[in-house]
Image (cartoon, rainbow, N blue to C red; front, side, top):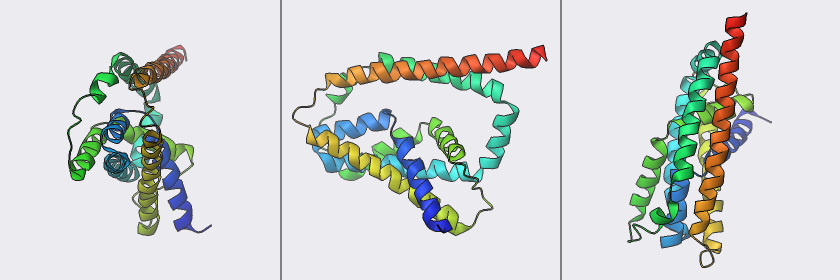
Length: 217
């Protein structure tokens, strides 16, 4: 497989999986779909996809730097990221999406849906580290020295992969629009918040273990 299709595919995988977590942009996409229909939800998702491309660009420009930074300070980073995940998990666990999704049902222009989705996603810098994590998991070593074709294929793939997720999500919600119960999101937040808190606890424990190992040795 040549470089362009391969990096396009890897970019699509990255874009798809970084979009899956149900964060503010996901809730907004669901809200737009429920209140205005599938097209509005998809356009809100496209705003988030555009944000993912920006974060992917930052990841490519600083991939080597951040990789070295993580390697040299992984104990502290595990601890900090664990605490951050626990805070985010608690916030999600205690939030009430039912109230949020019942608000602001007035009609909006599509460009406003796009802009709101973009803002909700771009204000979540954790997406940058998630993208870097997926890049590393896929064994990608793309940086600023890579060719423009490779970088373009990767960024296009990120956008297409993220768009695919938002399309599927908006289609799914729209199919069950009349049967969808807003209160179900309350349970989703309980489960996802608990899972994120657990990941935070595990990351913090790993960071503390690495610190203790350094002191012992």
